[in-house]
Length: 293
Image 1 (cartoon, rainbow, N blue to C red):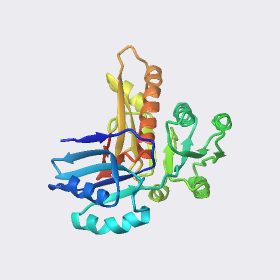
Image 2: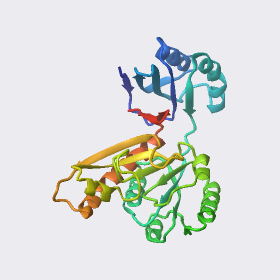
Image 3: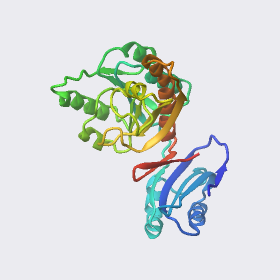
Image 4: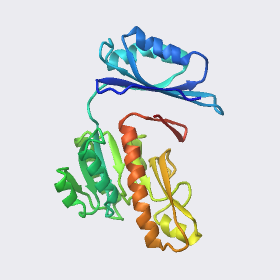
């Protein structure tokens, strides 16, 4: 069963994401806590995983009249969370997170993200663009986003990544988006940003992993191709999936046609994933995600 309560608002708000073992009265418990501290619920969405017996919820409430700040909420809510076994996180600060875009030579996803940010679809600050090539420098200048060229030497990738880590720290980056960045990140870098690196893979995972999925799909003679956005983990192309989409192809399509059709899918699934992450709509559990309305 899914229940959704939505009210449109532009006022300052907070968001709580949590999951726990399902039991009666959980919505009441959470809503009562918010009411006791002056919270007015603006949007609520819940989900139950019947097989695992888990309950998931995302609640957004107005900060007008709410008597707890971020630290106060954590302190007061903690005993309740412990008693009910909540795995939770809350977002009350209204600052826009700093985002770094990583790209190689293919720029279609980068162009899409830059445009969507310009028109206000992505609530973040674009801190910088990092690339192992200089092809995107013109785009960065056009959109007035700092650009850093960090060439990757196959015999010393650690040096490039060390510079990237320095840049990420300098710009206080909170989210990394791999907009067709054709390099494998080291386990060390991935561990620094758990569930905060989003990748787009030009395939409908778990099918056709690796560097040339369209060629593999063409060789297999599939009738559908897809694209997948997912969080990056230390296991290549196996992180929690956020969004996927597909398009139909036929025997008349060549590899070049698959690549061209796939670009549209890649843009869409990556931008959706980034926006949902920034809007605090994604809750990870195990190697799966719940994406709330």
